[in-house]
Image 1: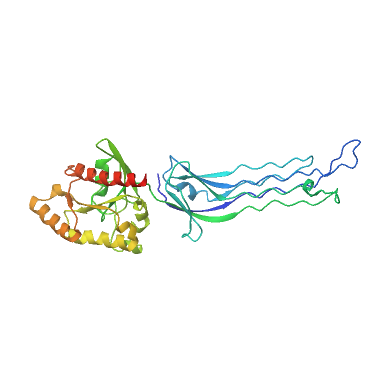
Image 2: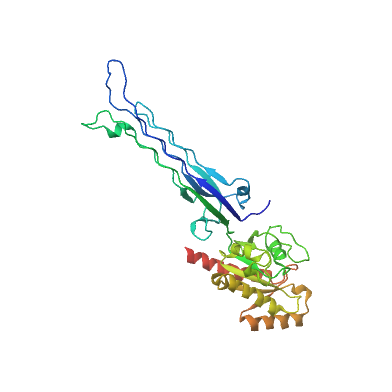
Length: 334
């Protein structure tokens, strides 16, 4: 399935129906009073968060959503038919913005959540509402309210407990495939991953969702490469796992490149809990692992986790540490 995480849509709620001008006309009642009914309500446009969707690709092919107009009022005090609301079904994690792409309208984070994007117009009043002792045959009525129209941007951010970060070819997809049932594309060249991937990780009879995004490169915070477009997908994560390719010469430079891009992109993302894992240790000598781990520890002031996603060496220990942070985060939310 193609992945699309941003889309622009046009919505319009239905106009309210007009009120009716009518008078009662029956046999033997030649001068019946006013009996014009009210107009029906126009349909509203509502966004609903549903399960089973993981992309906004459908909105590439349908971008206009218009609710029906309310029916006009009729004689014999008959109110016009009110129209059903138009429901737009969106994936969990979708954010809705105004046309300026900055003003947040709604953030859909749980299944069943509903937000009214455009209220349907109220129906107009029929002439029966305007009768009085001095005006027994009114011909006044009110038109229905006009519907609301607006352009909106939909932006999807994956709902994950943890996120994978690293330069291209750091082994993120291999790690995700090793710890979950996700089937990301894996190859020995940079930029193998072109779209975000999610996997459910099980550790000690507990589970959490792990997100893998395309590798970041220098200048990602300014739009270079694919990183900037997809960094938003790990903004909701409670912890970041920073994978560093242990087979490269300058592991400290690789670490600093990612940290610099995170800081430029978002202070919130930069300050999230982070685990640093030296990956591909199966291809390194023990002395190389110690030397590169020591250099990373000195640069980051954090514990370094030597692992190999291929041989599974050290992976369980990292997952358990991530699970501790995630469970603490879940308790704070409660």
